[in-house]
Length: 95
Image (tube, rainbow, N blue to C red):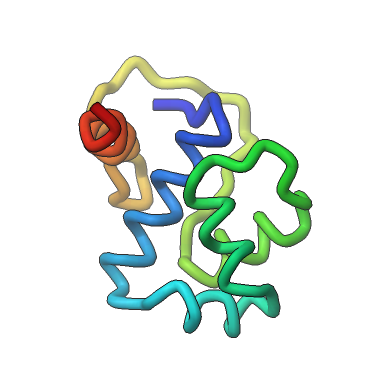
């Protein structure tokens, strides 16, 4: 699945952070931002600075692939992250 919205990206970041057993403060320190910034990105803040978002993804080991090759597979991404499941879970949690 493609990440299409800031909320989708925030859900992926939050899920990976939790899987790595990092709290928001630890991730913030690793990236060089405030805990409030992590909270905002996880909630889908649409105006986050791209360089910081990329730093967060790198810190969490989430690859960014701009190869432009789309697959029809509904399975997990090559990195082993099932973005479909993460986004679906995040959307269910908001209802």
